[in-house]
Length: 90
Figure 1 (spheres, helix red, strand yellow):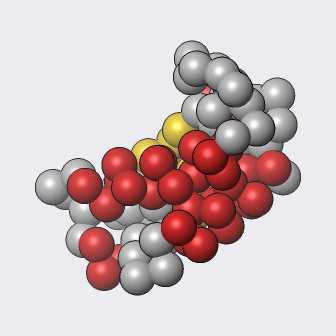
Figure 2 (cartoon, rainbow, N blue to C red):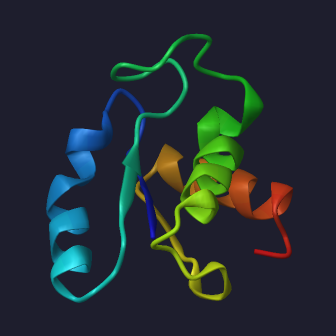
């Protein structure tokens, strides 16, 4: 699962979601959107990091590429959709 925070947040914002998803057996990547948290600016570029985050998640050995999901809060929903649009096969 790719977990993406909303505007002005950071990956820590999705901590409780990530913890619960992991408790239920999911591999979770909570990312900082571009220009937020510890990521580099600009904030409003490249789908806010959604496509890159999804590509990173799919590259992990512990992830079954046929069972990838996205969850986003507020602007993180847009970032998740940008990732899905960039990787429609995944």
